[in-house]
Length: 382
Image 1 (cartoon, helix red, strand yellow):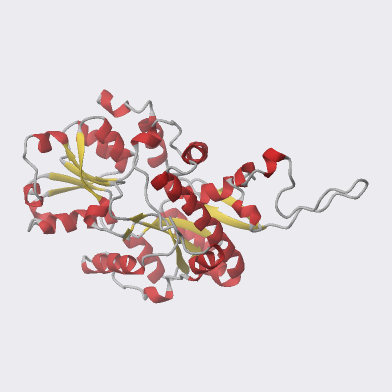
Image 2 (image 1 turned 90 degrees about the vertical axis):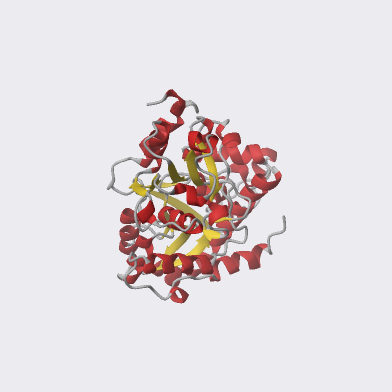
């Protein structure tokens, strides 16, 4: 392996372990610890929210009842920031929720969706790939409820990488220049393939005009560095590491190609959405508070170091320097799902044969939970 691949002090090895871990690990849950970061109560010695003042000689008051919610954790990436910030800052407990993170190995849809259907988990996150729509068509009952990464214009996270040599030499300038090149995406029926299709179309090309390669994100970097791949649709931190390593250029961002794309979503099991609606609404409020904290840190530097410390603790990005190197994803600070983008993705997968039976998304996308959070918190104001 080229030594440039480990320029971020070993993160690639860690990310390889996360992304390539064997599937099927048995579900293990762990309760998220309470945090004193929800305010200054712990630091000042004042009583936490909802507690009664101590009375000498009186019996200790019972702890308030918390409603447990099982949430699939997946790969512990920065895309889970709204939830992690909500946990660490005590927002969950403030709204009477105990968030129980469930380890489902690599967190692929093949693991998450059956666990959701079986009731092992109540909340999960994932991308808008063909597998999600097909699972719904085959009877997996879920509701798409909250934004988990939107490609807002100007956001630089993820996108198309091209070998630096091809850019520097002028071999690749326009989409038409992709003719005959070896291009990577994660798998057929995935949004990374949809990205390539869009850009190839700008140049009057199709997949028949290039050599397409299905390849996992970490291996894209190896192939680019060794000249075995000419371009790839990648995500963070792999994209930033390839650029920092000097062997790739971020040619197009995800937002350049699909502005406002709903890259990832949170979904509730139908049993949770219908049977524990009040808890689901309170969880959405926790999520939206966390998303707003993240966006304030990302766009205006508000409590940036505190946010980074929480993400270092909770995600696979442990090294402080990486947070200045890797572009941060963008979230909808009101939590709402971009229904038009979700529908457009299904249309593309259906048109290309990956979704045989499109589903009625009006029955699946449920904005009531984000609406409740906004009603409680007010519309986001930067």
